[in-house]
Image (tube, rainbow, N blue to C red; front, top):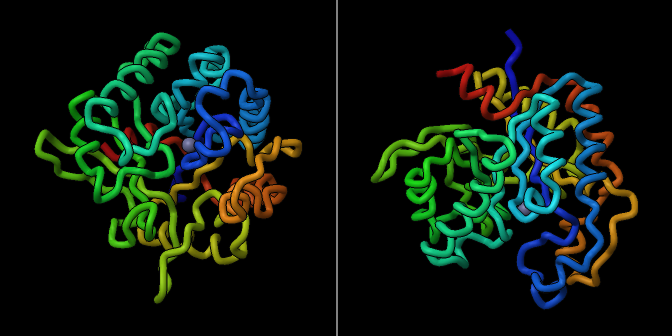
Amino acid sequence: MTMNNLLTVDVEDWFHICGVSEYITKESWPELESRVFQNTLKILEIFESHDVTATFFVLGYVAEKHPELVRQIRARGHEVATHGYGHNRVYTLTRHAFVQDIRKAVKIIFGITQQDKIGYRAPEWSIRDDSLWALEVLKQEDLAYDSSMAPLPVIGNPHYPRIPYERTLANGILWEFPPLVKRTPLVNLPIGGGWGLRVFPYGMIRSEISKLNQRGHPALIYLHPREFDRDCPQIPLPWIKRFVLNARVESTQKRLARLLNDFRFTSIGAYLDSIS
Ligand SMILES: [Zn+2]
């Protein structure tokens, strides 16, 4: 049997970027041109043409503004999960503020899909050593699983596991789904999404996925709607942010098509069902 890998999308607009409050304030969000609907439809069409289903972590702010988009995602057979409401890095929030953010986001999704089990992904993989308390909140709030801990320096911790695993918490067990990374002697490389998926050689990414699959583990890929937008508005950000957002962004679609041709993918929810 061919191994299934995990295909995920963080459904947010082009201006939902962490750590840029000097350039775009939250107060300005409602005035900015929303492009998430049309860009997510492009992704849905690509997935449909490859007959593949995925997990869509929809930002609460987006779900509230575009309930029809959430319905479309669901109607096409994909899994709807949550990316929180306000796109704040978890380690900048108090426990109380995180609980409020999660409840608001889950309530909006539930109001649209009536789903009782919803998975979670933090903005910018921001559950790390200084915000591990958030996992207990997710369990307490009955989220289905988490996908917020990157085995990468700075944004996560290179010592975190690189494959899906069950985390034992004070209040129960929670599945964790890390993004695909490539281990090198110096540093783990972020090849599963964002700039890494676009910039590193495709052969390197393919061989890493094959290696994981041969050992019986799925690789997790993540995408953003803005990566499918040729006319994405540009913000005058520091060069490092611009690189992360824009480097080889035109190659996303081609990369995705190759991945979908070379490997099998499914949603996290379907994967969990298949192993339980
Ligand atoms: Zn995000």
